[in-house]
Every structure is written in structure tokens, then in C-alpha cells.
Image 1 (tube, rainbow, N blue to C red):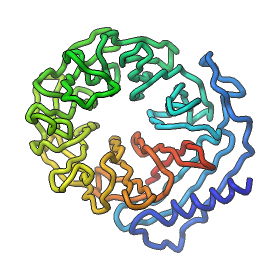
Image 2 (spheres, helix red, strand yellow; image 1 turned 30 degrees about the vertical axis):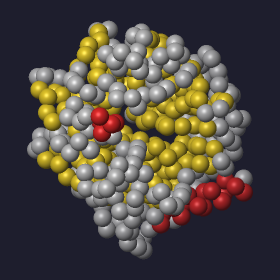
Image 3 (cartoon, rainbow, N blue to C red; image 1 turned 120 degrees about the horizontal axis):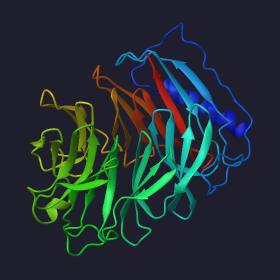
Image 4 (cartoon, rainbow, N blue to C red; image 1 turned 120 degrees about the vertical axis):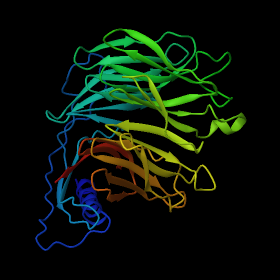
Length: 396
């Protein structure tokens, strides 16, 4: 209990004191902490049913802080620790009231996916992940790339029906699936004669494929020269990183960002720097990193593109020589990312408001993988050496 109290105090200080450019508010309420005694840690089950051992969300730390930052009108935030299971819970993805994450049961390979219901405070085993490569979750469906058959295939699990389905059975690799509604997209190397997912950096030739869950229909979306990869989808918009204008080893790092409107088949080239990386799309906005203004790939900046206005703005200028992968995510209202300096252990989560254009920060030495859904943010934080899941809500 002493460790829990110490952690609670540290977390309160982080959240109340590390939002950048705050001003003091004499009427600020005192942080409130609610602690509950923990139950037994859960053990993975094979049934998909809730069991007494598979639920351990009773110990929670709720923190409400009044903040008045000068950069954005966020008047209050609330952070809740959702798990305290003393096992490795990683890469949570939030969709509505549900969070899906994976658990490392042995070694470094994720073995199982779990569903956390934030309304009922229950955890539920979903399915074995196998040698998974990447996953996404939205609505009723979990989608992931899995090497259980020797090569990487796409699998889907429906959380309402508890049914798992294999989408692809091609002998080549299908990786990095992304999901919106009933449509899945991924990058696929079935058109490359020799390639191994264990050694992918040999002048790859990835193409973009899609699958309609309701129609049970797969199709090729983009199959240009060189490589097209890291697709993302929102409604009728599909975006990806494209190396068709690059040659040799230069095509292995970055490319240009393209957008395809599925409603009319129109393809738009968003960037021309050949140095743009991993786009995401939500509503009318595309977010991506780009190292056009820097000396190397490790000094990325973050850009936001307005599809309607056909305008690009820079929302983050890298002044910390940060690591190149910011783990960016985008919701209807916010862009979030993690910034980690090569030279120190400090990790900073940035929260950028699309509406106001202002940015706030949350500093913590052990925070990973922020994921956004509307005005909520889910992430993991190292607690007593293990990754636990936290939910941050912006109250306005």
C-alpha cells in the first residue's frame, strides 16, 4: 500500500504540474484520490468468459485536477488507473467504452488479447495473438497480423459474437492492418517474388489491399511501382506512405503521402518531400511525420493536412532530437504523440487540439503508446516495473 500511495502522489504531481504553460488558479480544487483494495491478479483463460480470476480492476486511482494552461482552454482533466495486475499489458487501443490490449505471458512475444470494459470495470480474455505483428481495434472488431501459419496473415475477432476469422491465406505476408467500420486495409507483398517478414528491408514491393467484412470481399487498392505501405482508413479516405518516386536504398526510409477517396476513386498526392512517414487519417485531417527540414531520419517533425482546404501546417517542430517514431494517434478533436529524447529518459506526451491549434504536454518517465478516441486518451505507465493501463479524459 505504501508503494501505491507513493505512486499516487507522484502521478498527482505529474498531472498537476507538468501541463505546459499553466497559470495558477486560486480556486483550484484539491486532487481527490480514491483507493480500493486489490483483488487477485488475473490468469489468462481460454473461454472468453468473465471469471473471478480474469478481472482485476478494483484498485483504481482517480485524480481530478483543475488546470488553466495559457496555451489551451482545458479546464480539467481526469486520470484513472484501470489495471493493477502486475503483468505486462501493452499497446491499449480505445474505441468507445472498450479498450483492447495484449498481454505478454512469456518472453517478448505477445500471447493474448484482452478486452477491458471501462463502464463495468471488467477484463475479458478474447483470443490468442500468436506471433502477432500489429493490430487495430474499432467498433466491434479487432484485426491483427499473425504468423501462426509461418507467414503473416490477417485475422479478425468480433467482440460481440466472439467469432475469430482468418481473412487472408496468401503464402506471402500481409502486415499492418488498419480498420474503420467494416473495411480493413493493410500492406501486402504477395507481388514480390522473394521476401521474408523476418528480413523485410530488401527493396520491398508492398501494395495496399482491402477487405470488406460484410461482403467478405478482398481487393487490391494500390499497386504502383516500388512500395506502398503503412495504410490507414477513415470512412472513404485511405492514406498511405508511398515510395514510387524513390529508387535504390533511398526507398527504405520515408516516401510521399497519398490519399485515395473510395467514393470516387480519386487519388491525391499530399506531400512531395519523399521524406514523409506513417500517415493517419480522421475526419478531414491527415497527420504524419516528415524529416524534410532536418539532417536525418531521427529528427522528424509532425504535420497536419486539411483534406478540404488542401493545406498543410506544422504542429510540432522537433527541438529535442527526439526518436523518430512518435507513436502518433488522431481522434476527432486531438492529435497525440509521445516524444522521447535520445539523451535522457524523459518521455513527454503531447496533446494537440485540432480546434484551437494549441498544445499541452504531460511529462512522465514511464509513459508509452498514447491512443486517442474523441476527448479521451489511453496509455500505459510502468507501475512497480510492470505496464499498467491509464485513461485520461479532457473535461471542458
